[in-house]
Image (tube, rainbow over all chains, first blue to last red; front, side, top):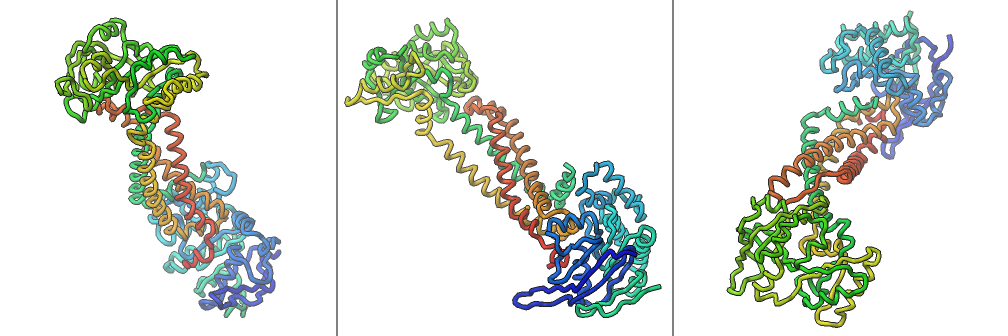
Length: 229
Length: 388
């Protein structure tokens, strides 16, 4: 297996007023292509910060992050935006869909950055929605969908441009158990059947149980690496 | 164009607020369209191809100061002058002092110098031979429902007759038609009476002339001819000021009211209010969408692209309201002109008015969208997603 993510000596310091808060301390981490990693840890341990750095939403204070052989810590903000558009899909706890757009238009959003025709964008959005089991909900707006359905639309949006990496921040944090299981099963299918590499932050040990590996973070340091059979 | 649905959806995210803002933009541009028509109407007065070949000579002191009629023969002898005529302001009102009528007492050859005013030979003859005869502009005739043969009283706001009465009697002998539609607002409102009847009836004129109009042989020599005319009265008690008809009309209009300044002031206040109102709408709209903008940036929209989307939204808002406002103004102008019975002769909106309006929409749209667009561009994704 090849490494998709290589993190070396990564640290992140936030400045709050005059105070400097070191959120991540010298982290080394490798994630193989096709892996499904759950990041766990107490609140304030640095899980979301690490996820944001892996997804190219933030820049580290020190160390390096390579994703697919690309040193993303060295990219300008413009280049990083371009990189995110084609290499990463994001799934958030609160879905973060555009409330005024239909499910299909929401899923199409990342494709607006490509040169695809309108018909092709529509076709691909349809396929993505079909993949998440919402082919019959294309015209529905987020308010007309349940939480689980909204999260599945959000997953369709994350995969529509066929990125190799999915970063998920508490994707089941706002869902009931049944919907959470559906979403997790979907993520597992994307990992196992479509080869997507997934890094997921979660508080829920049951959710983490769907991952192949679980990483434990505490006070900004990686303390434990557990493999799931 | 592929972003249009996104911009449109963002704009109408809060329908009531957007519609209310649009109504205020429509109202502002409707007002702009109407007031700009008034300004254009005033600007166009006196502007005509024939007007370029005419000079107006009035008193250097004030336009209400008169000149001796003896100047007529001297003016005719100035090198470059083709013909001379003269006129006096009558200042008439019909039935009610508010019904002001553009009324001039004119010399018999007055219409010779105004080929853009059409009147039939028979009517012109009747005007020359009827002492109390009057020629009236077609819009003025329509306004008061006058026709040839009508006997109409006018009240002069300035000149009484020898018995002290300011009520004058006239017989309408012809209707004036303007062939120059650009300046028709002026001529179609005109009431012309015989200068001789005027001079003989009022004791306050005594052979005095309000202003002279000269037609020059060569338009390119107009400046030299004007200086030659003014030189005739230099250092006398009736020094003159000669200028082109266009300049004279503009200066005369300015003494009545500086329409440009009035229109500019009103529109300045209206657009300033609009700027604050729509600026507030845009700021609120973008502030409410902080997390959505963060998501756009997360999935790869570049910072400048996000800024462009917000600016486009602001421009679309102004364009939607502005175009509807101008279209309404365009439709209302003929209605207002017709309803006023010719009191307001407003020109239809042309390409120039539309270009100015569209320019203002773009300018206000850019100004209104600039700050929220800048904020959206600088939005930090991590902070915005964390709700900070």
